[in-house]
Length: 327
Ligand code: SIN
Image 1 (cartoon, rainbow, N blue to C red):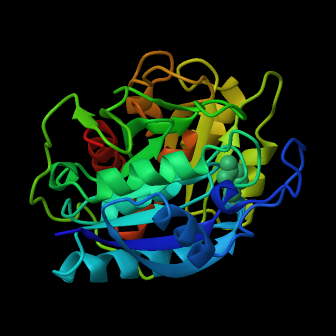
Image 2 (cartoon, protein in one colour):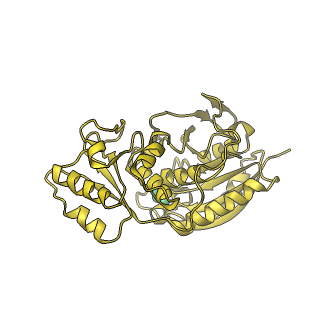
Image 3 (spheres, rainbow, N blue to C red):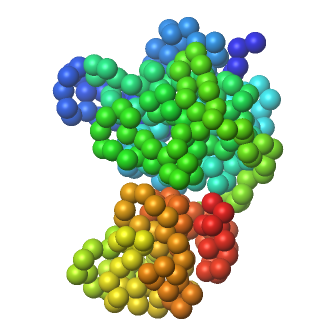
């Protein structure tokens, strides 16, 4: 029997048009999901695709409203025995944030696959149809279950916790850290590099009523503590430092962050460097300052995890550190 797959559309470049096959500028989220699925169906894939439009936007504008609708739709499809899997079409700019948020708050049940494209649908050499056909292959395969939320780009499958956009252009813009790809996929083949490790596991965190304001502060040479004060002044409930090297910042900034932590605003130190761990007590004395080390998570995903933790009532630095250690 052909797998029945729910396709949730949010927009992005995969639904983008340039109105020129070779032009540079384009608009994201312009192609209706039904139109996109007609093109996918013409490929003759062995799947029944059921469309549902959540939004038609560039992913720079994604936020609570779309996340809440996505979470509800996926949770419903998880409970509906007629669906084998779920695909979310998404802009690539924030795909890692949406994927990680859903990964933290959904059970590791049916395959949930985020897919995007780096080139608009009408560009010469567009990657959208290929990526979509790969997403159908993944979402319809029972072997994809129990692995958490997956992201597929350029014939490569990543786990939500590892994936990040590492280049502004080119179709192979995504990387995994600390784990590289989980699998290679084509419309006809799927090769996993490791067994599923979360089969049947429940959601790690409850879906919240709302997400708190958590800001990312990027450290720069010569900066002072004023930006920290400004962020606290607008009511941030948590802060993520995109620090230099192993999550460091000028002494006055670390002192201001330590003061914020002492006043009950959790602070996580991540790195503005692309790859590498941020560990406790290496250059910054986390034990003394009350700060949390982001370990393998970059700033964007550290912010997502901190928002989910605070929304679930976890504000104590030791418990936050535990969550980052075990991400
Ligand atoms: C977006 O994230 O919506 C625009 C960029 C893209 O999808 O590649």
